[in-house]
Image (cartoon, rainbow, N blue to C red; front, top):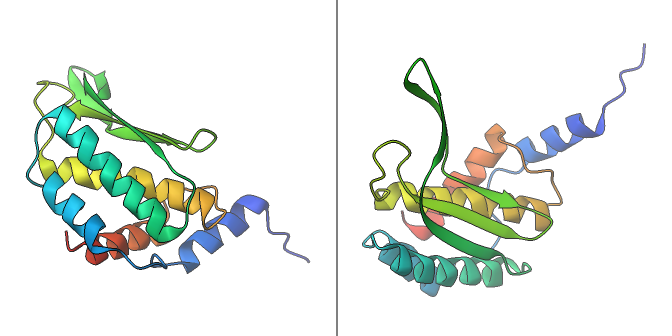
Length: 156
């Protein structure tokens, strides 16, 4: 009997086989990430996110991603009065568009800096996967290992 691997299976295996980002992270990117950790205002985060993402795109040799930081609450779903799912942000591969909501789902408070930065890096990694690695970027173990590798490079 022959086992035929589907394109989805090949994508999954390729994603899992790549465990780190393969580019030099510049001091400018590291400074932008550090500055984000000291930011709260949406306008400041918009500016710093653009600096960081532009620099990561340059470092990785990628087409520029557009970033929008919104002063709105995170999309969420409730079940029996409890939040069961939240969406912090998203990436649209066809337009290279990263969107992040800067307020928490229920209370509408400004996202903690670490949560904001983690979300920004997570969404950018989808861009990296799609553009650089030619993957249909999915949440595999390899994806999260690449994310950890990127955070380690940025010292966050």
